[in-house]
Length: 64
Image 1: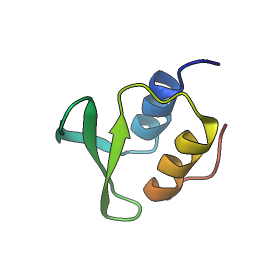
Image 2: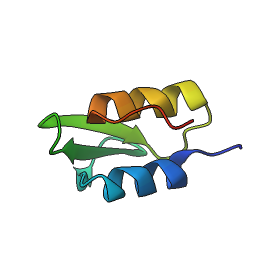
Image 3: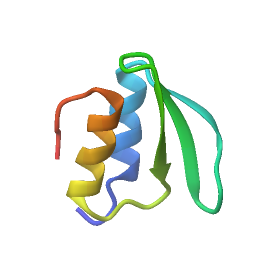
Image 4: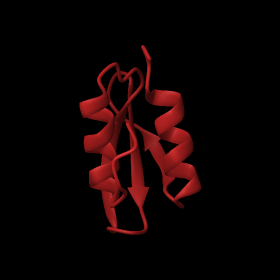
C-alpha cells in the first residue's frame, strides 16, 4: 500500500475522532475523544509505522 492516509482517516472517523482544523503545510489537526488529545495527521502517510503511531496517539490499536 503506497498511501495510508485515506484508510487511516476512515479508522479515525469510525472511532469518533474528529477533524479540527488545517495545520501547517499538508498537515491536519485531529482530536480523539478516547485520549482527549489533539494529534497531527499528514496528508500523505507512506509508512505503516507512522500510520500506527497516529492510531496510538488516538488511543486505538494498531491496524497496519
